[in-house]
Image (cartoon, rainbow, N blue to C red):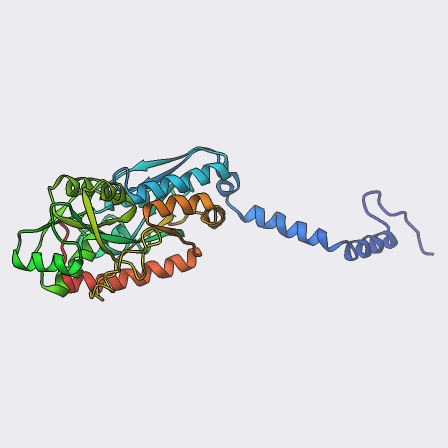
Length: 348
């Protein structure tokens, strides 16, 4: 005789169990979606989930007042507004922007230390310094490029040239009599001028400074004769009659001074130099943090206020993906490396 024992209290009867399985199978697909979301959240590091829990430091590897510094401050204000924490800019200039760049390379990859840098420390320095304390292609997580702009071939008012051709004539007649300033050995302004001298055979004297603003100040006071400078920064001195701009080094004319010819239009097709600045984090920074920073920056550069501030510097807002930025860094590393070797430029 078969015994019919009652099901244990903690175990559903067979029919109930089958009903339960059917209910689970027919549950809303949102249940599965929620489960996946919870799993994804669990896979994200706790530090990334809680970020930002305190203030963020953005390092500008140049002296205060230059385009890099002003662009860093403009975008840092946008980050602070979106993230709800203090975002401060810290200037760590020197050694062709490598000091501040190295500082960020050694920082914890937690999203609290960022870098705003251009070609000087990322593409030029690896080919200028025998022992660089960072690897520009391995030690950083690119976030986004935010600005691009040409340089302006500028002379102080005592140099009588009003065109590039006139400047070339004066320079050829007085070898080593004219001096040119740069924002540092191995900077974009330096490489652009070296390209000009190499293509024309000019014999000029290089005087490097620790940043664009000190270099422009020296040109304004007559310590040096010329330089490739940020157009927006020299405009006030041009308007005051202390400096004169002869041409710009971009692929196209300047958005703030379209009457100026390019160096290519002036007959010097090899002379193209543009400053580019982008945000980076230390390598290993969680992708969730990189993605959030990228989203804020990409939205900010579309704003009219950012466009107007950048235009005053002679720059245009730009944007790309972290992957595109990384590919550009690699391409520039190779291209400028060849150029530096050909021109035999050395760090000073």
